Image 1 (cartoon, rainbow, N blue to C red):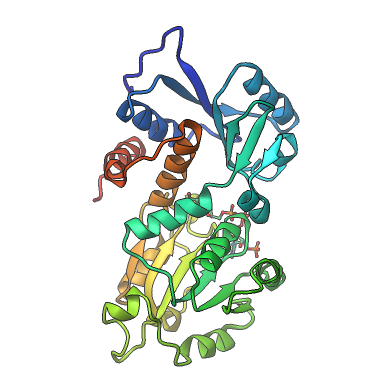
Image 2: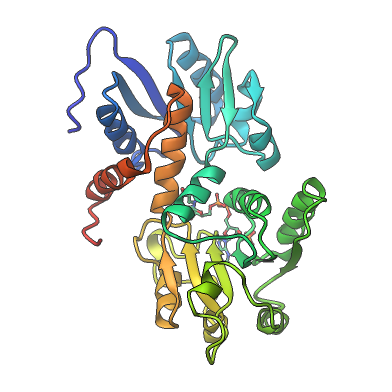
Length: 320
Ligand code: NAP
């Protein structure tokens, strides 16, 4: 157990989703509560769809200071909030509710969480060529981050091309002033064109080029962000893209999946000489951002390693 002592003044924080039983958010937040010497209990609530409105209103009535919202309610919950942060509105998803005088205000901490995780891992974005694999819910946070970080080129690959096109068009409309080249493709239908695009001489200017990957025999000048659900749960031996030539171009592969700890995508990146990361630090930092919003505080990055360790222990991960 996490050692929190419940008493008459313990405040309530929590998670709404379905399912929630395997979530590590309670461990993450219990660790922050302890480190910051606060008095909260963070509980995971499995909520049926028809009860979502009642759950939000009930939590407010009970005085809950803040909530996280996870799959499948990140979009649906927005209609029950008194206000939505501008960035969350743009991303079309809310994962954090902050108590206000009139109800909960919705935020999206996935996007800044991913940015802070990448920074923590030493992956820089500015001026970089980035291939995004996937165009589902979380790809919105990825696109928002990439446009904000002023990358050079974005190539969105998705099984269903139409979704990649819609995603690209939406962000290009909002960030019309950014000079970022955005291309879309279906990796199943357009694979040769994808490889042509990735083979063009487009030297990155970020850490990848500086780290010396660029200029060798194989030009590894792309950062790949894996944002599909392929490789999770029962399909851990699968990756959305299997072709070797693709991985020859990847200097750094960032998988948003964190369970398994090392995905097939990450293994392929590594086998082809690139660096790979999983999504656990994104999960960590989206939680840290939520905790900061609830309490109007800043949590030092130095705490991150300890909290991460608690999360890994809870997940039974023994790897460094
Ligand atoms: P989603 O909205 O359901 O989108 C799923 C994506 O995966 C779509 O691009 C979909 O392609 C693709 N996909 C699914 N099955 C596929 C298959 N068999 N072959 C090829 N492509 C397939 O899910 P999401 O919310 O974006 O989440 C995606 C992943 O990100 C999940 O694994 C989740 O764990 C992870 N995630 C991590 C964090 C974190 O904090 N680290 C936060 C959020 C999400 P189509 O469009 O063609 O269907």
